[in-house]
Image (cartoon, rainbow, N blue to C red; front, side, top):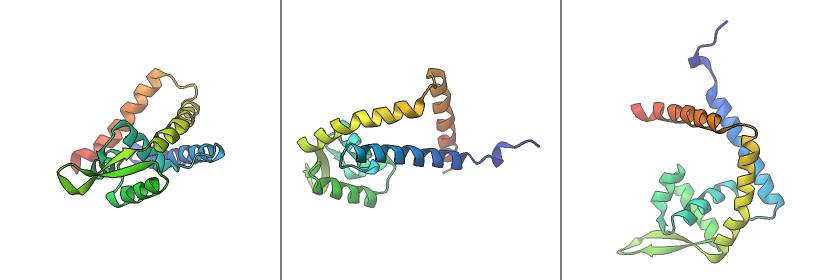
Length: 147
């Protein structure tokens, strides 16, 4: 019996893989005593690479809805990892900046993230990576075309 591609549960495969990676990363962060969740890490990583990013831009690049981003930033601000500063020329908008403490926690977390990436990738090579990216981009773009 042949399986047509439209019957393949690729979504389930992607979803379970993401959940496995997230739980492994969270476990390692916890074990190292790093006070970050995976979602907080994603924001910290983006903010540190794009200092002064707006909350809206952050929501776009992380594919999270604005209220979720606001909630995570509130938590990161409480922990003293980031700070909101008024946007120049618009008092209603905020830009997000890393604090010294935030940069420090990013530095502690990064090797753990890198280790999880290495562990997950295992024995796969560069050609595998190129094929993987091609497949994931194709799936992603199939949804972009018609929306």
